[in-house]
Length: 480
Image (cartoon, rainbow, N blue to C red; front, side):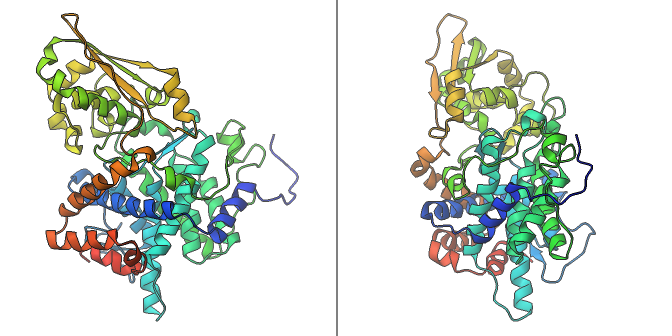
């Protein structure tokens, strides 16, 4: 029941926890800062690669064509010069478009690098504005530290709070983290950060329906950019004097917890530090929804046995964890790329047929191959309860799957199981060289070989990168 007596309430603890962490928290973990550097490279690279796709680029640019903003934000790979709110949308849209950047899997799912859009937009705008006033710009070290904090806020909330079980989308946590870190970058106090976060919570959460059958669509590729941009907007509104709210979570009846979260508490399971960045998952080789990455790796290992015998296959058994079944187990027609990359059967079929998977495999031309749907029709997806337990175990955080093929003549392949995908922390040493190659290849889609090597050399030198002004780094990546 809603409170009718209008007494001043204690501020929600979550707002205080986030504000104290963002304003006073010190990032001491060298592993977290090193990982943040690879997240920066990987995320920006994914954004540059997305510029090859017209469905993405049609959404980019200023709201009013031709608008150029004084001290405006640069958008990598383009000549756009935008205000920080629209800049965050542009950067976030392109970074997330191909579903190829980092991932966090817990009670809630998500992509903490989505917050990089808000961080780069705010930092670039601040740096250019500072220079115009004779002040020092921000440095990339502040970007990396802000990334660690944004990852920690979004991923920390995801550990024990499942929005998806209420039909709500994970980009609410992007909005909260982006509001917090961008408000701090703009110079807001702890009280300002709490107020900006309260606005993000009051703003609410979008439905997940655009990620699932029968409504899977391209909004899932720009939703995070929208959330990051709203985080920046709330930070700027707060710093212009707009009031915040003390109990956006806990107000009886009208707060988020009662109105949208079934009366459950939205809280942090562990103190905010650098756990999420240290354990974040990379999509190293394949742009597939992360719950399907291990099944894809297994399918690719089986490709040599399967490719020449596709017509002889009787059935294919995919064994996986509960979250994969809930989010990407899908039968029936797949109508667009977003539909396809959220279908474990489609992902496995591509791996078996081609021995790899690229973003182009989700496009209509590739999807017209009749072999894909013939294989999908032969697939059975089942849960392994041990896989489901290990998925939630904080000491393991595995994303295990296995694939086995049974042929019409009674023979069968081995059951190929993959417990940890290559982007997992436990396989980080194996992944880093591949991440560097991925970044180089993505840079080459937008820049000359000479400029690519210039950018790559800077990013691989941690000391030089950290000392680089943000606006100079953004200039290096744009054509403005």
